[in-house]
Length: 163
Image (cartoon, rainbow, N blue to C red; front, side):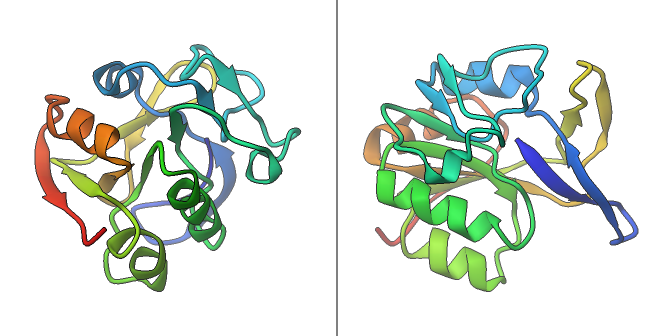
């Protein structure tokens, strides 16, 4: 869950850890693995966690995965691994015009859910932060994850992708 977070002014605030809202995780169901977990976290997002010390991108993934990848240039690598694994829900900024989105989402994902409004991520202390600097999207890889995403109750717009 390490992300390079862009402020509302478009300047990079530097590498920092921003946590997925716990209520969002609950609405998505139980996960077997979070390969982008902070080293210290106030709540679990899955049964198993890889941190940056484990290099989750280089590890074997098993079961149903939740991936809130590092935002920025490396996000594409994580989303491609999600697609390869095929049993994943990922959370990232909804930058639909980017090469990353075309290469790792539009042609590889099963479905997407554009979240209504802006998420408020959390700090590793458990405190809620300000609204995100951009809209967010949940990306389902695999039919079961697409169904869960569609029926999650999360406010937004659900769309099927090309895969």
